[in-house]
Amino acid sequence: MLHLLPGGKERTFKEFETLFVQVGFAAFKPICRVYNYWVIELLKNVNNSPQ
Image (tube, rainbow, N blue to C red; front, side, top):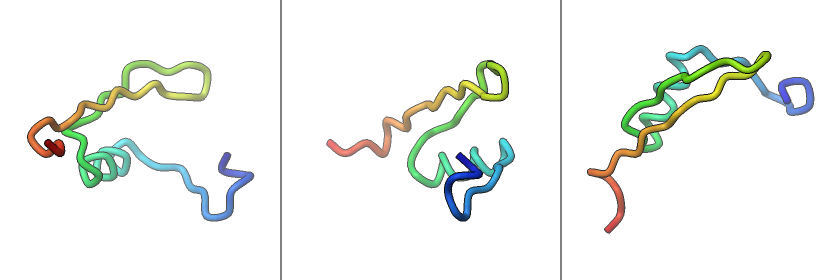
């Protein structure tokens, strides 16, 4: 996808963590790596969920 989309970039785990927390997730955990891809678990922040 980086080659197909203009402005695409690789992100570090710290950049992903910052991005996910900014959009409302409590945390994220990299679970495993499959070939060149990571499976990432996102944990929902239930305190900020709309009622």
